[in-house]
Length: 249
Image (cartoon, rainbow, N blue to C red):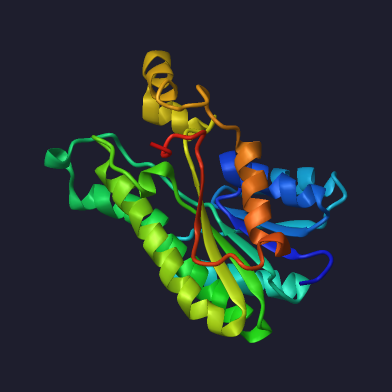
């Protein structure tokens, strides 16, 4: 890997993705951030450049293969390679019982969380396999290991992300590429606030965390940077759970 790795982050405009972009920028990586909202993306790239990092924004929607293919091609056109990819684009969907789920709600969650991860890996691996090197980090969740009433589609999508991660890791090992996932527990993001829908429910969720608090996006970002780095060079096909002890029992 180069001394200034080229890093692509999808879903980079908010939450964990945004914090991860700054974590890599602080290490002087060359960072390409991607998301659907142009103005926010351009502002983020400018903020990253102010840290001294080389940074670019490329608009992309991971639900569409043409977008993803062009995104990866844009990274290579700008920096000549792709060393690290963090697939952080995701959505939680609506909190609804299985009895009320619909094909439309399924598509809304799975197109981003599962198809988006699959398409991203497909085109990231297209480049990394030719290089003979690279590291991919997908974002799962505590819900990739357990269930949650009302969140069947989100839970199922994160189980799928973990399966995709392990399968891709077995394929990618043949050409020197590692594929892992980081699975956060409750993290102080807008998504957590939407999921809990109120201070009382949020406090109830955090009471189930042995450390009795939510994580921060920056804490998850540090875990992602580690898993992506050469410090974790013998790790592939693994799910690193960063959840304050929530799945220890």
